[in-house]
Image 1 (cartoon, rainbow, N blue to C red):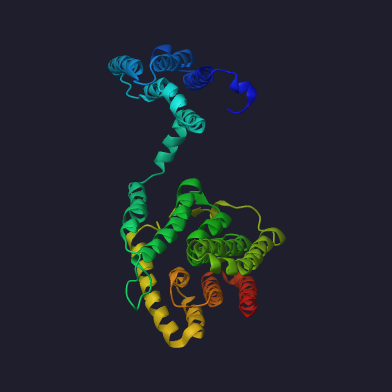
Image 2: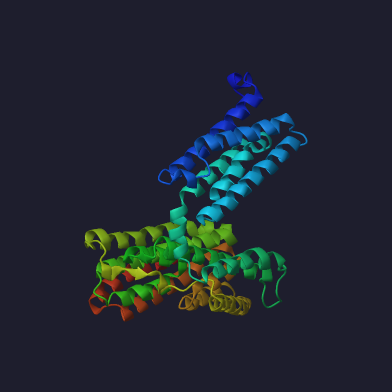
Length: 424
């Protein structure tokens, strides 16, 4: 409070006003929430909650050092709430106690205002208001959870918050320069990106259209998404939208790889940035061409892709596969770099492009093979170009025959751009 006007206002008066206003807001929200409820079923609304906040304020300022009046008031107030709740259960068989918990929070506003930063108190009040209003939304959201969702969340928390901090940050061996900590960190980061995409597909966009499938799927795996889209093209779906979605997935692949590079090796990320910008713009323009110029039109029921099209990235077999590939590529990369140097790394990158490139690329970002940042940048671009060739083969093989000419021309343009980037 640095303004001259506020400096002249007593501190207690400002705090009292804050408590009264916050309590009134909470009470008004309760009144709005129970507008259609019978009066006898409502604990209290605007007046009750405002007076509750004021009572807490009075009992706190009487003795702010030992809290004794406030504590005594809390015991009496809590006892009354307990009696009310017991009678509510006996008379109406209703077990909800949201209003009672909110009343306790309202009573506690005074010590919060006096002892905590203003932003924290405001955040608590806003959270109370929001949580009170989204009951129906939370109910609908909970229906989307199956039996394994909280297990999946628990897995991620264990991966990131329990196992990772316990691992040593020393190289595994002379043959594998990656430490257990960095190895597990790679699994956590990739899983986090993929899990975010999975949650968006399952809970925000449970039945996505073709274009959105490309965008969200590219965060998880552009190769897997290309396969899904290519197969979808045989279900009487707009071919132009299928091709556009494929290149939107590739656009998101560049974003995903840049995030990984920035997380593990910022120098390489900055070197990759101009190339990724150009390739991202090109793949986006190809997608826009098929959406706008070729008149892809709007989606239909045939273009709905279920959220079950991608598995949960935190499934055990997914983590084992990634970890196995990570160790395998670490061994292969160490051998190739030690025997053939930078040229060997470039060749290996192109070969690896026909598999899952994330484990190999993260190895390059994290490894200690004395490779120059330029060499790593070229290896990453090599792997991406090779992977785009693989996606083109999948798309040509699995898609509707009438789309293959345009798929080939579009992918060829992107592959040539990648090759040009290598020479530049």
